[in-house]
Amino acid sequence: MTGPGNEMAAAGGGGAAKAAGGAMPFGLHLSLFLRSLLIQAGWNYQRMQNLGFVYALSPALRRAWPEPEKFAAAAARHTATFNTQPYMAGFILGNVARMEEAAAASGGGPAAEARIMGVRQALASSLASIGDRIFWGRLRPLTAEVCMLVWLAAGMTCWIVPGDCAGAPLWALLSGPAASVLFYSGFAFHIRWKGISVGYACGGSSSCGLDAFDWSGVIKRLSLAGLVLCAACIAAAAATLLRPGIPASGAFWAKLAVPVLAFAAQRAARRAGRSMLFTVSAVLALSVSGWAALGILNWIRGA
Amino acid sequence: MDYFALFATAAAAGLLQLDNVQFLQSMVSRPLSASLVFGLICGCPGEAARLGLLTELIYSDYMPMGGSLPPNGVTASAVGVLALSSGVMSPGLAFFAGLAAGYLYSGAEFRLRTIRSGWNSAVEAALSAGRPALGRRLGASLAMESAAVFVYVAVLAGAIAAAGAAGADLLFLAPPADLAYAFMPWLGLSALYFRFRTQTLK
Image 1 (tube, each protein chain N blue to C red):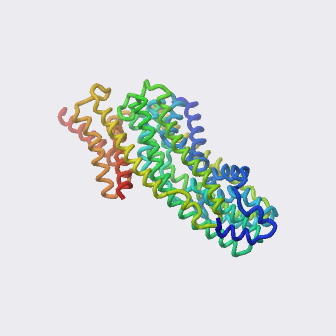
Image 2: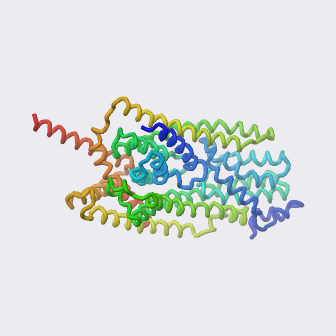
Image 3: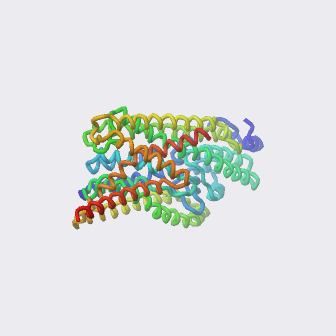
């Protein structure tokens, strides 16, 4: 691999051996990984994730710059504004760790420092866009679908039929959220861990991590999986609701009216560009006003 | 309301809030799992699980991209489950009370983030003095976040409990709230369907 970081390392002197190549030492990798779990801890409007980023990067900076003054100068540089998708931060941490080692090996200087900050910023924006689409836009809603399907498989239907939850066994209650957490966290922690080693391996490149996986393919597959699982959830929920003899039973058409009206309301709200808050508020307001109107009608009839 | 359950739920919410934004982000703090934890504490795990899933579905429409502040799922679940277990509110009313609490918490989160902006110059000064102490700063940040959620949940749930103790009866609002609540699974599922359909066809 001949990234600019490696070129910097090759040009360096005595410390170059440390930066010349190879995998990140396990201890450093583990330390960066554990500290990266706190990357959002100091989130602030002025410089966003900068405090968490410096904290996470500190072990790598100490390794690259053992002298306290140089470490302090390097850490101060990284207190500049930084923001990315938290699960994708590993790619940038690994990359910057490698570039700092290379810069230290070549004696540092304004050009190397400017390059590190430029690559850091470029990667933060690109990886944030990818990460937001994968984790917030697809994986998180997918986990809710996983929970619903696991619950239905465990015979827990009370999220569709109110009052059905009272006798649900604890294992059935736990199964849905446990499956969701394992599904989501397994993927997220894998990316967090792998990102550090991938970033370190291609350190110095401003496309580092962007070509590590087929992100576009991952996004498409997650969207498709989300749609398929959602269709399965809707079909299973409808079958449960329309089953004869369920506690909240009523006329077939009356039971069907709730999902049909909800879908119609959602579609209308989305076409009008309204948020979920608007739709939920509208449903609540219509229920309250309908109930009040019925009450007034009954009162007039009684009078 | 059981005051031990109130205290324990608020404390659990304070801890889970750390997972929500600041540490791990492992999904344990999402409403569908957090509600179950609160339900186990309050003795109503089944109804709490339903409330949590529906809160999750409604809040799934909001994404914490960039510096945006989505509604807070931990406080929504905690207040909802505590309101439910108080007996003052029906399941539907408790759900909507929780949703409102989650939306309103964004204001507190905004203030906490603003306070932390003032830390940057102090950190820079400490770095140049050779005493970074970043771990301590982040520890203080976690403690602040946790304490804020603890106080917020305890105050809101305490107010509901006090209203109940004072004889306030909100159950007259139960029929329309529970009717609207019956729509929530389908509103949530339809939101997921339209989102994934748009993403797939795009």
